[in-house]
Length: 134
Image (cartoon, rainbow, N blue to C red):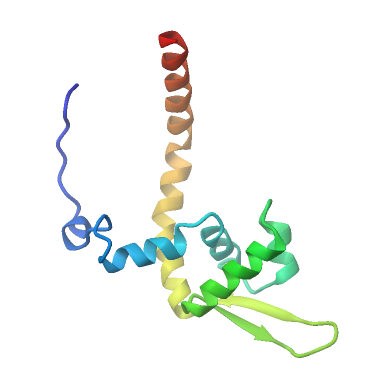
């Protein structure tokens, strides 16, 4: 087995997400669940109502959408505007803080677009190696 060396990125020298006391860990927990990034992505495209979010995010239950929106609101990433009408009319939008996170996620989504095929290929190669070893 060969080892590769690489230059440590500047951010990695400042934070240690593996340390339970590192503040970065709390932030990763906030956005690292199954739904938060998807909700932020959709709300980042414009103000959305609850039903619109549910339609755009395949597979999310109403309960999980509500919990995710509440967590994002509690952490200052989205705002909830209740128009106090009948029927209920509530809209969600990114806060300025949420917009900064959206800007930071751009490179991640660029990486996904660029390397998705390579990841799928690696997964297939791994499955072949596992099958041959069995």
